[in-house]
Image 1 (cartoon, rainbow, N blue to C red):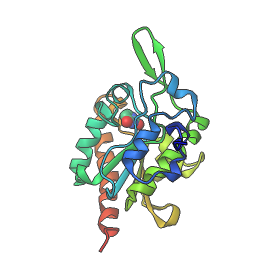
Image 2: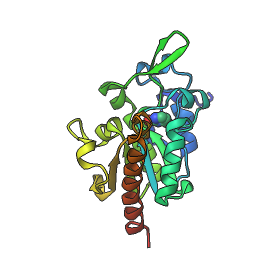
Image 3: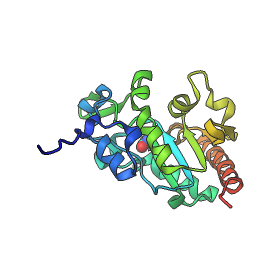
Image 4: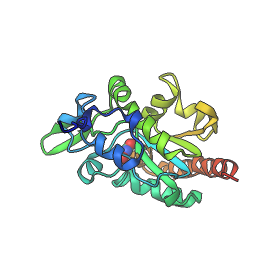
Length: 214
Ligand code: URA
């Protein structure tokens, strides 16, 4: 009798051993209800072996359509901040705590909704698998959702932004704000908010230099 292979949706992310396999399996993910309305699963992008892994909240409208994280306005701002902080884009793996776009339809517009604790928890095995496969030297959380996913519900980004924290197994983790919060900052404050993001990323660059494999 021919061997039957497991449906991709039933694969345990912990058993997957490369990023291509992870993307294929995550495409069928039904671990929470968000797959019903989103166009597709949006996994991380960047090389296995990237030295820094950045974790955002969830794909936005543009990312949901393109199938790539951080390709919209927040991603463009992050690209500029990375460049100003001297972090080469090709050393970065960008992903999200939640891999489906959560939104409310208002007329023709899809309005971003914050993912729930249960949705973040349901998606965590995919993030853990990305961490295991990319093995970054430094982890960066962008905004409150990513920070809470990795550091717990009581963690406050505003209090610890830019600090190099010791995460699990001694992996350095730097929390900072989400680039979309810079975009939402009104008027003159925006360039100050951008500079503060760059200063946090300079702290990431310093951690990358200190933790570069010898
Ligand atoms: N915001 C995020 O948190 N992630 C994306 O991929 C895009 C916008």
